[in-house]
Length: 287
Image (cartoon, rainbow, N blue to C red; front, top):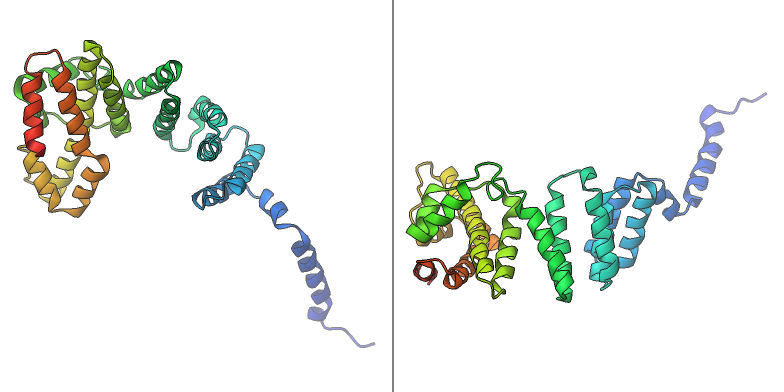
């Protein structure tokens, strides 16, 4: 009897397997993937503004892994982009309730900022209270601002600002908690809208922390480029940064000028002595 070669025997089985695999719908194959893969697919759809598919994929990821704060944030962003602020808030809050499961723990800060700005959209008294609460949670994690690192440092920085000006503060102090920078800025600018003197005083503190964080990081970058670089004035810092594209880009992205303009506004409204004079100094540096 003639023997059939082995490769010929397995060839039909191979084609049968291939045809069966091909017959499985693409969606079913996708659902068999891990939750993190579904999340990545959803992120791609979201960037492409295909919100319906993004929502579907985020939902599939959550079906496979119910406690998945990154996917909850994705759902919130899709609903926010689609104009459904009610559902967006719900998913942001659920994500924050599961923040301890975030792969990158510091993502909690950006989630709180996004939720805070969502509250700001309505402008109601209750939502503005909730916005302030979210911002306060972030800024109170700042070890210097909260006093956990040194309960006298914050007061010393503020006193030096009023007594000797911003340049002197930037010569002596550096901060290293960028996670709270934007929250400090937004809190300061929000407090500027108040008619209470205490809020204006608090606005100065928040905006000062934002300014010191940004300026200090730029100074450190310039030191990395030129080891003997020293900060002298805000004007000089801005001019020196302009000669180095990466540092200049950072100052632009962090909007140091905008922060300093807001700080000058806060100092002008502050009831403390020398506030107006210090505001004028900052405005001259930015002119």
